View 1: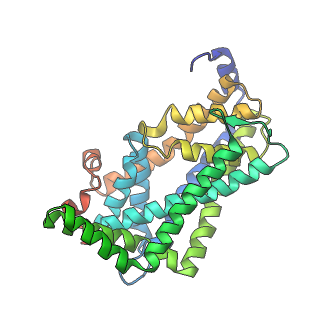
View 2: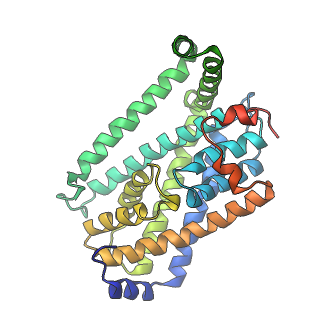
Length: 326
């Protein structure tokens, strides 16, 4: 907020079109049911059968609610924890499926960002933190592409990799810890199964595109709600930069990180920092509230408490009796 002109922020807030802002909130909230649809494509039971949508919706809602009110992306573990309590799936398998989602999210967002950078409206000399945006996008694409290839190699021939992992852990750890880590590794590999199923792989790619195009539409509609002269492809760039900005564990709800990333992106298109701040805060708060309320409702339905979610972490499988189901 340093250097913010508050009169400009207030003027921007007063000029917001409430109908378009409502459309923005609806589109942003729609991404969560889309995440549920995609997650059901990725996460299956031991017989490869789809899992029921109701329990998984509670896991999605609670997970994203937890990200909004707990620090360090605790919602990712909370989501896997709730799923493992409600359906017959391991905690580690559910967590691995979320990791697959994140890699796909990154690759799809990078592809959409590339379209924005290639558009005639994009200023060719634009930089972010002193580095050309095109170079940042290329480096990130290489990183996530490499992660995808590694995951694919492991899931196509898991036995030798699991055996190697077990030998290494037994060599450096007591047997009880090595056995526990071996069980975790098996669950993680099970969560990657979707990568070797062409039909499900294609469905996951399709729903990822639908999800992120819907999310980008919410940013674009919000541009119009504020009367900002940002081209439609600017929404693709904004969501990509935000996606990577909030990927690192940070404050609850990503407050501060979200607003600064939005300011830096909108300045590329000539929007002042003060007006960009008004846009960022309005979008952030208005789209955060619905899923937070839905998550709290699911939390009450599941008869869980926030204190339960704070205790969830990488060691959770042993505590929850993973794979037990409902």
